[in-house]
Image 1 (cartoon, one colour):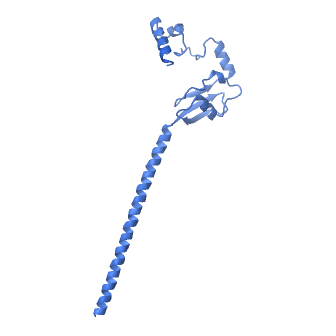
Image 2: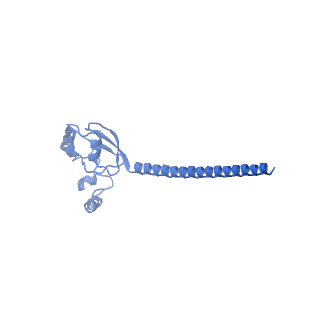
Image 3: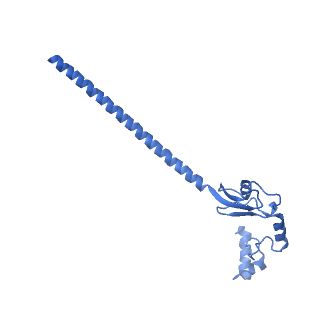
Length: 171
């Protein structure tokens, strides 16, 4: 009887050890999976943050007129008009490149229109000096008399606009 009892104790002890080792291995796997899940979560949040930063660092502009491929383009936030023209595959042969400020920084949502040489020459001969055809006055280039054509602008206000422009640059 003692032999059977001894065998039973050994078998019981072996089973208990086996179950203990299995439970330890299960805990270790659970810890590893938790570590893996937390690492994946951190990586996902890093990826989301990078995507958000990338989205913040780009702008969208519409390039049209005398460019080879007019359209809407996504550019880096520090892009210039020359970059936008390059995205549109460059100028057409009849483009008036010199009538566009290629060094100007572009803004999100901006339309960049490249006129033809004919359009540029018609504007130059119209006496408007690059102003739009809707009788608008460009505060950055208008002289005293042009500024006074605006409603509510007299001699004093026109002079102060010109003084401000000379001191601080364009508007």
